[in-house]
Length: 209
Image (cartoon, rainbow, N blue to C red; front, side, top):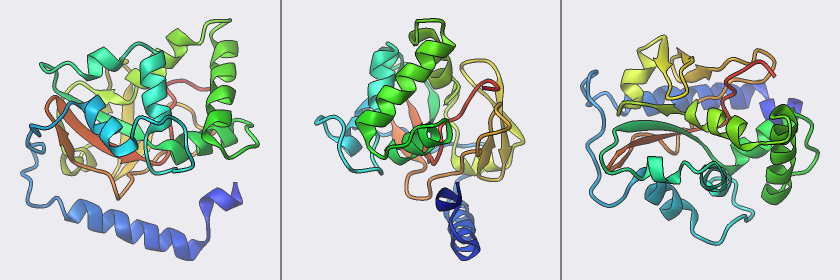
């Protein structure tokens, strides 16, 4: 865990970047969200940032999230042009970091996915899909919301039902033993035709594992 946390100096630099990121949204009214983009749904935006080649060595894109959404049968819902959603999107490094916290010893995307599927299969009594769906819906807020607006709240309601706690740009999930995600300062307020994407650096967990 020390390698993931980094040094105090790096943490201070990261905190400063988080403050700067939210400050950059100050022009957005508190009750507003980024304007809808005319060039793609949430899924299309994720694919545009990741390509269609599948797992690779780029931890900053969303191959694992795309694989998870497709496997769970939720790609259609996140592509619905009539929807208005906010997606807290873990990138590949976030999935790998979460898998390592749960016991995965590798560092590759394919290995992390295989490990997570095995863990979800065990939790789901042989069927990983319902658990995977619950986890993914816990990353979706059924309303388009800017990160500035979210950062001023104490919690947000999710599509899964349970709320996510908010501490500025940290998101508090329902597992007290795993590190809580923080905003990915390189990916936030990404508008789509049916919502907005904010990147996070860990996977949100909707239950105490």
